[in-house]
Image 1 (cartoon, one colour):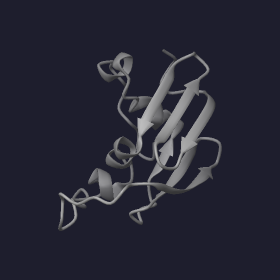
Image 2 (cartoon, helix red, strand yellow):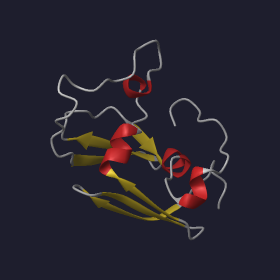
Image 3 (cartoon, one colour):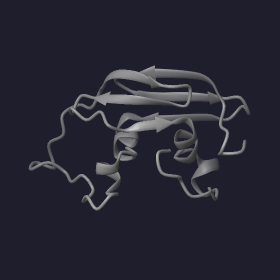
Length: 119
């Protein structure tokens, strides 16, 4: 696994209805479902930082309409902003953050340095 501080994405495949797959230059592969990405949104509101409570489920937590990515916006050369079908669009997912939250079996138990603000 590469240094998590300098992840280099070689190829990014985005499916607006299924999720994101990233092939890294060190031959690691990460796959993220839409629900996983939405649940791991790094924005201040969702993360509960800056004194705000973390985003809670809506008034009908059992009903969740199909989640989709409406738009993907590049943020410099280091991140993407996802615009979700639920109207949320403030999360900026840096490539470093993508690598840190990789859900694969190799990464889940691996130690990672703390996530810096804005990552």
